[in-house]
Amino acid sequence: MVALSVEVGPWTGCAVLFLRSCPAVNLLSLYKDQQGKFSVFKVLKLTLTDSVGGLEGYEILKLHDADPLLGVEVKFVDVAACRRFLQSYGSGAVQQSLSQHTCRLLHIPQQELALETQLKAGTHTLDFCLDDLELCLQHIHQCSARLRDDEIAELDQQLQSQALGHIPQPPTLTQEEPPVPSNCFLFQKRVFEDRMLAAGDLQRFSNGVGRDWRKVGRALGKNCRALKGPAIDNLAYEYEREGLYEQAYQLLSRFIQAEGRAARLGRLVRALEDSKLTSLAENILDIQPRD
Image (cartoon, rainbow, N blue to C red):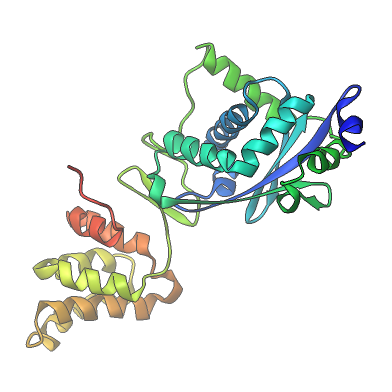
């Protein structure tokens, strides 16, 4: 009986796909950025097209800010397309496609992206009943769709124009001035989470910086009062007998103590770049050397 109620007559339905991505990129933060908005929409459009087997049978209505989740409201106008989507979602193919398109378009290494998804139709969480596709279809069918958001219509038109070659591709994360979320930083055209410095960062820095610790200290000292003036020379004198490791360790420890929550990974990486120590920055960021 459920199957008949789904299959007969004109069929429409609505579902919302919730996404959470980390740590390399935050799709919600990127979508909020005017330059990153189009890239996120293109990732979602390609993913949905893969999952339903073509451009027909669905349309994106609206993207929701459900911090920390990005909600993708999708209207289905064909029951077969909706069933294919549910089958793809249940098998993990949607998540795989989403991951692949995100990494390809935003140039993020696959191992640096973690994705979480949830699928809802109204108050029903469909992840809990994916083994009963007819029930999922019924829940989706019972959700009335809203009008399409004007911004989504504009993004869709922009994507169609780009596919026809009418307009140049808008800025993405690979260009000179990429959009970077406020909780991230850019290094070698890649986005990293700008977290607080940890004990592991302190050890890697102290092990790898060698005699250049003073140079890094001066770079950090441009925006840190605790490292201005004679502070660095005093550290060198005070810990001379303990050697370079201890001098470097005390330098970064003092920076962390003085700056507190503002002692972020991005500030250390910028100081290393200013000091021409990119290989040490790569080591701290766990970037594998290229062949």
